[in-house]
Amino acid sequence: MKWTCKLCTFFCGNRKRIIEHYQSSHRHYRRNCPLPCIYKDCAQYFRSKKSLQVHLRDHGLIERSSGLVGFKVKCLLCDFEDAVSLKQYIAHLGKHLRNRETVTCPFNHCLFKSNVFSSFTSHKSRCHPHCTLKDFKKEITVQECELSESETAKSESHGTENDFHVPFDDNSDNEPEYHDTTDKIQERLASLLLRMQAVLHVSKFATQEIVSEFHDIGVLICELNEYTVKKVLRQHSCNIDENTVTLVTEAFHSINPLSSISQSGCLGSDQKRLSYFREKFGVIDPVEYVLDSPLKKTFVYVPVLKTLQKLLNRGDVIDKVLEDTESLPGHYKTTFDGSYFKENPLLTGEDQTISLGLYIDDFEVCNPLGTSRKKHKLCAIYWVIANLPVKYRSSLSSIYLALLCKSVDTKTFGFDRLVEPLLRDLQLLENEGIYISRLGTSIRGTVLYVSSDNLGAHAFSGFQESFNVDKFCRFCSASRSDIQSCSVQRNSFLLRTKESFNENLSRLRENEHLKSVEGVKRDCVMLFLKMMTHGL
Image (cartoon, rainbow, N blue to C red; front, side):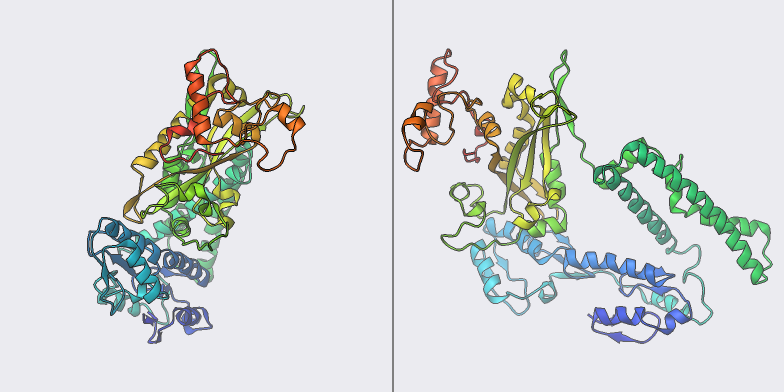
């Protein structure tokens, strides 16, 4: 790709050099004229070097997500056309390959065709290991519309020595760009306020105090702008009537980003900020379910499918999910090397799938007397995308809340009733999947594992939750008397199996008076999932 300066005749084939050309001690800055974006398909102009640098970072994000600035890629077998990365495009072709459609290799000078997914990916890895979207055939890449010749000439005509105004008149199409910049500043300000509450744990009252103080600062800035405008006009002996000065200062007031946090602004109150967050940031509200209306017993569920769909439509997340994990025979590196994954027919198929990991834990809040009181003890179920690499999956930002309830309610109403909305979403994920627009197809998935402490695992799996009973272990059938008379080591006791677990359940159903059989007192709640491997 050739990069050409829009203000002079300089051109080069390297993006870094054209940026250095703009950012160096160049005559464009000395004559103080507006600076255009270096990209041909972008018509924005900027007053300062810093504004241009910030804008170029936005283009950098587009490059990292799409892999090719200024281009989209299309599929020759369907109407799919979007700016995606190479991995996302190959994943889309996998949709056609799994339907046994013949797909032609998209890289230049390659005539390879196949309707087998494994053969196609093997060919790509073997013959095109270092190819990128820039190596695609011309009929697959779609170049975005460049600036017209008239617009280019117009921008060049404003590159004179005495130019100190925006290179378009007030009625041109460039005016919305200022509104776009104002909207970006407003979104950044809203993002800061949201992080203060969600990440930095600043209270709503403190946030409102900060917002009020910043608004007062904004009022002072407006007054300073008015004084500065009048002072500059007087210094240059500009004979401008008072009405014009008023219009200029009002224009400055209207673009003041801090006006959005005034009482009448969209971020002025907690309720307005919450509405703005829902509209702009796609906030997923938790759903409250009623267990017992007279006793006011409820629990909260955060929809897993909605959250998962938003995550997988982000380029940075879906790229990490689609990464190939290499494993050596006989080495156990991740959960994908274990037998539970390899025996799962859904996760080990040819289609791209999503594996979820659940985590259950109880925690105490607002109790200075310690955890033994259990008055405010809560039970939470979290989930994580198991396809993510370990270094990303272990961070707190990759762990999401699915369910929150009081621990005492899990014993009163049972896990079966509490996890009903979660199981509905997981069953939908197994049967139909979720549509990922960046891939142009739907992805199915299921739960790969459930992790917890001993108490949570016994409660979730249907075993007795007291460890003072005779059959206290969920891994083997050892009794309390056995561990006193026999050495506790490998192969000393009979291990539990799926067959023995189902046999114990059958005995419970046959005799309603039995509370437990061999330590089993009810079904595991996850057995309702077809593809979920039973094992905690």
